[in-house]
Length: 233
Length: 84
Image (cartoon, rainbow over the protein chains, first blue to last red):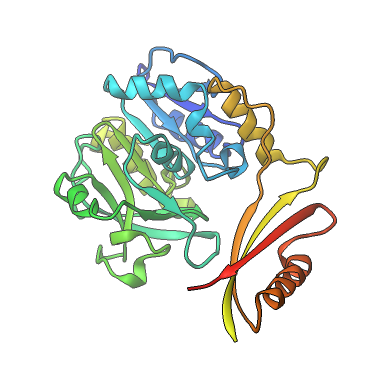
């Protein structure tokens, strides 16, 4: 199928979702390429993923030290050149710290690490996710302590106007309300995009098979890989 | 009773391993800075009611020792000022 599609997966010290992400990308028929955080340049790639975990032990701030790792200069340059970049959970935090995505992720107001299944709604159709319609509800796991998405005062309307809000925490019917907001994120935001860079708190790589609870992660990643609805098991 | 603001700086004692500080130092060095050492601690503000500034400082010494720092591995400094 997409055997020629190379997907770089950056491994930082403390990444821990890299193996799940490698397995997910492989199962979709693309070729995972493991990238060490000390690299100063990227090989030829079609996509890059910053996986979840606790890079640098979450020291200083989640994602702050990884955002300054050597490979991130190359990732930033590649993103500027149009390479699609996906940050999952800690990867999302890294992209925000690097300034490639707007906003930041604060500790959950509950003070708890939240680990649960969560419905998220596709807030706007994205050229990065072909075939994933606006309003589609996905069932995905979340697992984070710093997931409360916030933006600078006055920036929120702009993000909506530009269609940069990609995913929002919702109920199973796609309704948005406070009860379905697990972590106090502004406007229930679970994922944002900035041109070809996207970050999301849920873990699609942990939702690759119905017998494990959900296959919606498969749909999301297949869509991001440009395989849309043509992806098959 | 008057309100006073106590400001605490809590840091790891000399010789206590600071992995967060070391990781931050390494990243600063990778960024090209001549960062020879980094130690990471905490900054804490507590507003207390007391009769005098001296009494507020005494309270500060007490809570610094009893809760805000672990005397085995940390030191703390506390300063007091009027709270508006």
